[in-house]
View 1 (cartoon, one colour):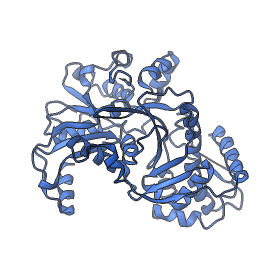
View 2: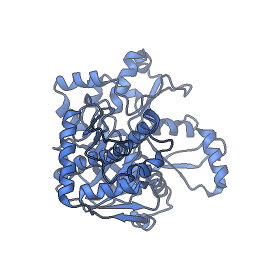
View 3: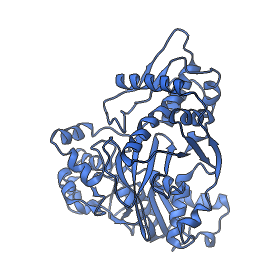
View 4: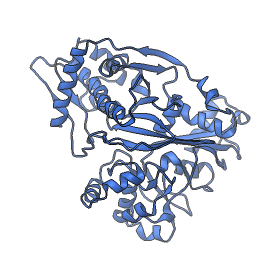
Length: 437
């Protein structure tokens, strides 16, 4: 990692004196555990999509803990979040004794990167990543002893929690980077994208189309408890401001395109899906529900599996490719409608980013089925942009959110075009198919 950073700076021809600060953004729920003395991982990281703790989560729900967990952490009990992954490592990998003796450290990926960048001197995370663990009290902004006890996790494992902008540490021993560069901004990837999209007002929302699809809506200074199966999470904490968000995640988005490419051999490059899908006027009644790792918000059905419905003798690869893109967009309709109900705010514009946001067919269909305008920025990698914005705030490069707003630029806007009867038919087929998944 550290070698790659130095190489990247060299290729970009960025001099050491030009680095004002470093920002970090990361997969929020991926769990890493390492030896405090050596800094070496003691187990493979367990990524956010891993479902190995499904049985543990089911037992916690059956024991009646779901309501209290949601009240404190804002989250539903699901293998998605990192704390049950940590419990699995302690018990299944025989690490509990070492953890209880204070020899081990847990962190989401940001914590591990920060540990490496500072030469092992810092064990810290920010409020956005902490709020994705299942053991963080989002009202008190501190680890919850009650939830730690529920999962039998030693508090000594956990990093110190700081705001999202400010000094986290300084570089030490990083090849190609001088010692002493401040690391001044950290946020989990989806909160970073929300910040990078300048979604600074309550009701502003964005969707990041990556491996999964992640929708966040800024709800302002107070957490909004969801009644519709969404998550309540910390959006950011910066000097003078704490913001919360409602979130809904579809676990599979771009990964569905990868499956068509690698699993079924429909094309050799993911970018080819748009041409294949546009070679037919519609999906021919085919519906793809890409629940390959279960259904996320607002359904929360970890046992669900992917399904293709509506196949006929006339179905072609093009119909399935188009239906896969439509499935990505239709998942988001379920999430955003739930978000509107919880927040009491009607969505006006959805800002989009991530690799799949470059697909015009997908963006237009998303606008059609939502019935709202889609705003695509010039910079699709707004997750990285958000980390840079936060680091800039933390280091004084920008002094306010207003200054950041001037940096954000729209590239294209998609407006609804399809008649509502056609949209209603799409949504009806989708609802029937989801019930079968």
